[in-house]
Each structure stands twice: as structure tokens, then as C-alpha cells.
Image (cartoon, rainbow, N blue to C red; front, side):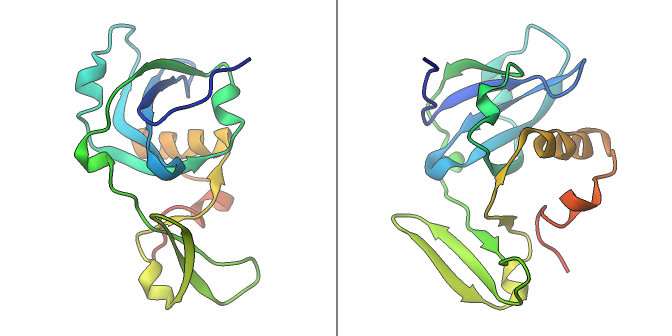
Length: 155
């Protein structure tokens, strides 16, 4: 039986044939990807977790089951990682926008479109989408059109 993920778990993700990166499981099912990639087998995890986040998303529940994801250790969350970020939602085909707040109870609040700018979509990302975002973030590779619409929402 597979180990259940826990807050503080740090995973190595082999997102490329050559490179890997790291992420940490946060509160409210958020996953923070650190602004760090490497081809070394000697990464200092304490230095890695001090890096800024490149993005913070929800993962599809099957992502961590792939052999590309390896649990490294569990570390206490840094204070800056304890903040729960809001996300936005725009139901398919609709013109309404909502901000999702998941502090104690999940709450969707109807808002103006502009209030969603800079927020992540309230959706779980599949492994292929995570790879696309990492390749864009680290190497500037263009995003597929289906991904562009879901990354932090801008005008």
C-alpha cells in the first residue's frame, strides 16, 4: 500500500530526462514547487526549501503515484509556506467569477473578473500540465494553448 502524503512531505519530481525539481505538500492540499531545478544527485534539501516558490497548485491525486515522484523527507513548513492562497474559478461556459477561500471551510465568493488577476485556478493539475509549467518556468518553453488559459489569471 502506498504511503499517504502528509503536510511537510518533500518530493523530488523527475520532470525531464535530465532534470528534476522539488515540491512540498502544504496545508489545504496546496503543493509548492521550489524555484530550483538540478541534474545533480547531491542536492542540499535544506537549501532547496529556502528558495522562493515558482508556483503553488493542487495536484491531481494520481500524480504522486507516478514513478517520476519520489518522497525525499518530511520537513516542518516555513512560516511563508503556512499561508493559504486563494484561488479563482470561472465555471465552463459561464461569465461569473468566484474566489475560492479554503481557510476553515471551503467558500466560493462571487467577485468581479479583475479580483481574480494573479490567482491560480481552483483545479487539480495533472502531471503533463505540471511538466509544461515547469518547462515554461525554468526554460521559457512556450505553453500549450490549453494550459495558457489556466495559469495565473491576467487580463
